Length: 349
Image 1 (cartoon, rainbow, N blue to C red):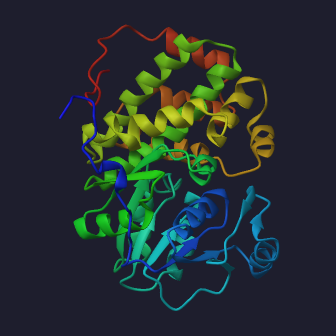
Image 2 (image 1 turned 90 degrees about the vertical axis):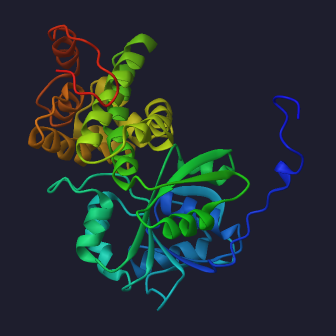
């Protein structure tokens, strides 16, 4: 075989999913709707659970999510609902991180759950699967994370993601529900690493937006993201994640996408802060949940608890809290005492 040429038949791969016929998606925002459309293309019946009966009725009447993902038709096999079916093959949690504990009791015992929310619980610092298992310890859970902007997912842009579970069969089962011609899905056993990457990149994306909002260049943002990736890996490995996970799709991959794209609400929020808006003004302008805000608080708390120095995560949190001006934060970071760089995942104070 000539180098660089794919083996014959590689492009003829099909993505059957006979084991997954019905899926419930909890959360009818932009992300939940995007995942519903993706899965529906595979022929699955999808129940898209809205926050109220009225919201479900509006979605059903319009056959389009005009509030969060306008312009994309809901096919017949996507059923907006508020009342849930008695059973389904797979349940997707696609609500904001601060609503995971609230919706967890809706899940049946022993069901299969794919967690797609990215964040840390503000009050406890727990990951989303930890929150879920506190409320529903009997479920079989996997988590999805990667450079997956919802609008690009529904447009069919070639994308990759990772699904992690401590149960190998569960990881493959959930991955099979997502795999298609436009989405390549890898599996992993590093549940903690995948979740910490997906959560902390939101905070760093806020920082990237602040940098751009201040008018700095690519040198600044690249430096910040490289050091931010280091902090992500140090904190994530302290909690049990694997350093190589942060070099993959749910770490550096998701970070690059979220910290550079105007489609990212965390980046847009940060840019508005850099341009001089207050946190309240920036949140109102974005108009959707900005996961980097509660996650920043939780991440700083975890770093302090584990004795980890995280200067970037800390100053981003202080800016969001209105306790530090963006330019003052830059001065503080640039005037820190010199030290060795340290490899990703190694603590370097």
